[in-house]
Length: 62
Image (cartoon, rainbow, N blue to C red; front, side, top):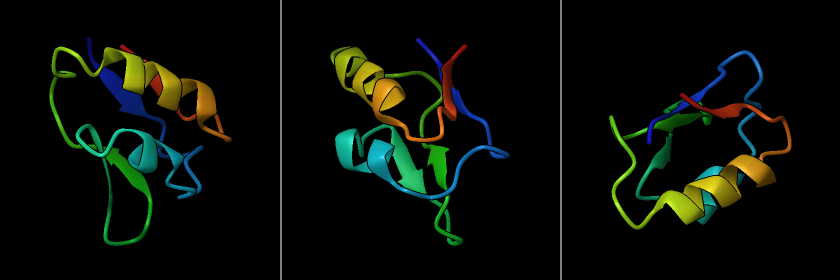
């Protein structure tokens, strides 16, 4: 599974980082980014939760 963040939508709430810090990090400007090329096995559920919880709907599976 792969995910991406729509940088035009992200507002830096950091919900994804708090739910799955193994996959998401914050840039030096406070916006979220995907830290891995592919979601590690066992973290798909946490990523799905982050996708649902994103207030700006900026995270998309790809």
